Structure formats: structure tokens, C-alpha cells
Image (tube, rainbow, N blue to C red):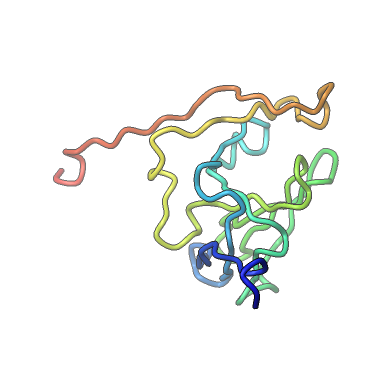
Length: 151
């Protein structure tokens, strides 16, 4: 493989809570694009997501256990483990060439690793706004309580 075709992005391992669904992935933009959304669905789901191109995710185990959920325009495809119910990833409506991946599924990562996560304005989707511009609705912040682990 020539240097111009070599992909130096790290390969991450990921799984749902029960381990039935396992997948490997390469992040498109690393962790600096972690985000939440405030659309009706994401508001209830509550996951922090990062991006991976469609061909950068490989389901290595449990493909048959993935369940698809779609709503409203039926463009985004949200995948869950049918055993434990954990959201794993979704094909994004705003960027159909990418998946949003649940950070909590990625080995060694947690949504609580991020002190601040931007929240996208999803109540009016970028594809439904003039110019298709993404808007930040706000920020979700997390500050660990240093005494909590000792309690």
C-alpha cells in the first residue's frame, strides 16, 4: 500500500451493552466533533455521538440482532441491539455518507469524558432550513464530583 492510500486513523472496537452487537470503526473527524441533538428523538435517546463514514464501520458480530428505527422523513436510520436495546449508530440525515456512533459503545470511551458537548438544533433540521446551516442550540456540560467515587 502506498503512503497516499494508507489510513492512519485508529481502529476502535465497539459493542452494545450485552455484547451481542460488536463492530469496529474509524472516526471521520476524531473525538472533537462529539455532539448531541435536541430533536424529539435524540432528546429522549440522550446519546453523545461522533462520526464515521459508512464504509468505516464493520459489524463483526450480531448483524442479525440490529434493529432499525426510522421516523418522520424516514431518511435517518437508527440501529439498536434487539437484545439490550442500546443505540449503536445511525445513518445521518444531514450527512447520509456518515454514521453517528454512540460514544458509550466505543471501548474505553464514555460520554462523561467530554467536559462540554455542543447540542445541535435538531427541532428544525438543517436540511429543512434555508441554506441547510447547522445551528448550535446550546452546550451540555459535565463536571465530575471528585468526592463521588469515595462515597
